[in-house]
Image (cartoon, rainbow, N blue to C red; front, top):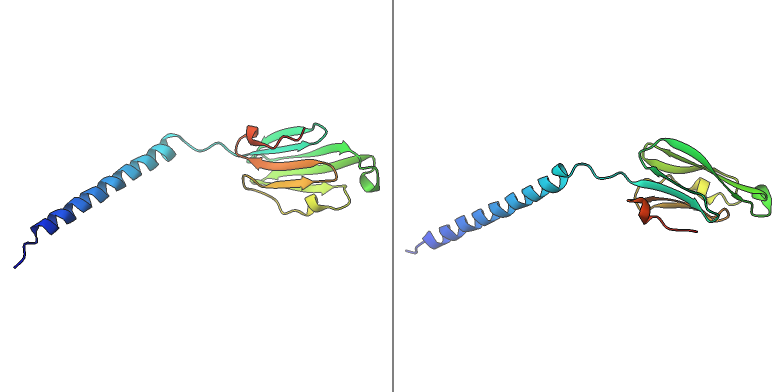
Amino acid sequence: MSDTRPTERRRRADLVLIGAVLAVALGWFACSHLVTGPADTAVVVCQSQDGFYRADPLDSDVSYTVTTPGTGSGADADEGTNTVRIAGGCVDVTYANCSNQVCADHDPIDEVGEQIVCLPHGVVVEIVEREQDATRLA
């Protein structure tokens, strides 16, 4: 006949330890998510090589046109234009007069770290966590 008391004590100690770890984890979660409040919203930064710069919250509802010097030939010979729209937590280039249309054909973006680039016009639209995280073109 064996004595099961040390095994029962060990099991009880394990359960107390597991409970304490869970309580600490739950406390950390509550402090980090509930007490500090919601995280700052992401920022959409749009800029061009020639100095255009604009930053808007990702949750804004705005549309604007970026004008750049022309490429010297084609539809954008004298002036490049890109229309940027922010709506519903997404960013999209809805119009561009460049020849390749990569930026206008790009799917809308909605995550930090994503970019839409128009190489002919030198325009970069990106979503960053904080404005100071944006890529600097100029």
